[in-house]
Image (cartoon, rainbow, N blue to C red):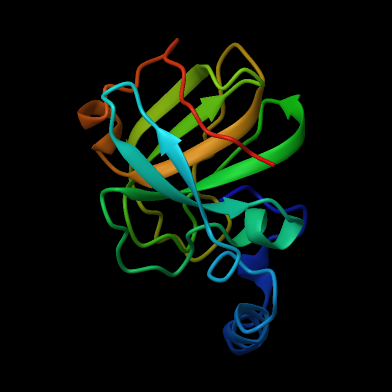
Length: 159
């Protein structure tokens, strides 16, 4: 998940749960907006939920207990930037893959561990040299099996 301007972690848990439940039932959430197919260098396909609104980008894969190996979440941004991510309230290890506007991998963080700290001191992850327009989150360790490396190009159509 992207680090929100006002940390969601500071909201009382009952309020946050209520907000998430209401928004999950609203039209346009990732669960009913469909999945985007992402073709990897190995020839495999990842089915990714789109995180293309501020709320979806702020919550990402928080509170999920599992993620299928062939599924993920694609964060879509309107402009290139060194987007920062953290693992607060994320219960599964992830591979984080930053992509430029040509869908070329510019940075990978592999097997990023969960963060169970109660405060907002979880480590932040960002690309080291190039800006990104997309960030793909997949199950920890999956990038290697898909042969995703820095410089690889992923194939998908974002309409």
